[in-house]
Length: 342
Image 1 (spheres, one colour):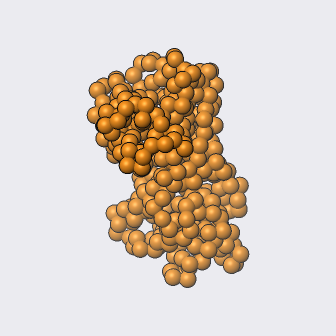
Image 2 (cartoon, helix red, strand yellow):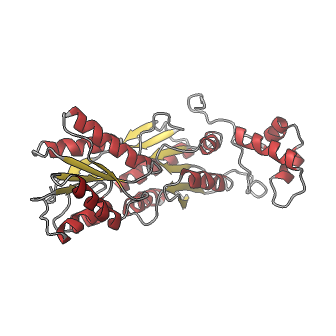
Image 3 (cartoon, rainbow, N blue to C red):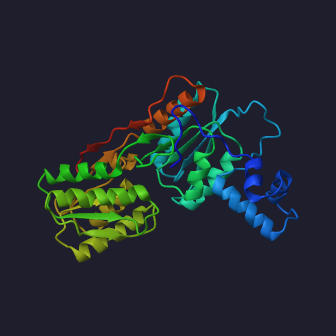
């Protein structure tokens, strides 16, 4: 992690810095970074190594911008068809409405490699600040952000080593609260449905919180089903609950990584003639609109998606405008919404 003096942003690496490290001229660096240029393979590799080590990003706007004010910020979210992240984006745009700043939005499909590509592409256009989802990034992505010289806000998480500032919550603690709430109602045989990979780091944190809470309560924590590559769909949630019931038919309550997978599980149980919650209880995460509209209505965790986006944008604009001193960490609220499915 880069140590930054209080209130100061790091110096943004320049083409000259790359040239010095690579032992070439700035003109050679410029040529090497252009498609189709005639630079030897060895020289280009040396230059690209210097670029990666410094976190340098080519400034495509440098020729036309002298004020360094571009009038926009960037935000990167995992998905554009997930209502939670759509609400976060809406919170950002609403908070920007009176600032004159515009939003450039990108989505990663839960891939940190794709996030790295988007970070570089957006930084080339010199946004005045950037908002990210989560605190897990590739080493190169992190270096570029640390060296960008602009405010960075990480959201939907509480990373142990934040790049700059954070607006988020602990996904693990939120899932622990859900387990504790349901255990207090008398449930003892818990199951969990999540994805098959760690690419959804927030999903992995929820699973860890599930296990942690059950171990603390001295309850079995081994009924874990991993099914589907994140984000898990309704159909995959339906298939996963079948696997759960085949392996542990006496499961009392199933907690899911999201409301979408929980809805799929709920519908599958009903198709099989099982009553929810009498035969099996089901809970989700995220408080999607579908959770309040399905039958029975679904117990879930509300994490104030809109508020996360709004608070992140307000903190970012405060940092950009130099108004006051934005707090490094803003912890957002989460709460259990108990409904008929449990």
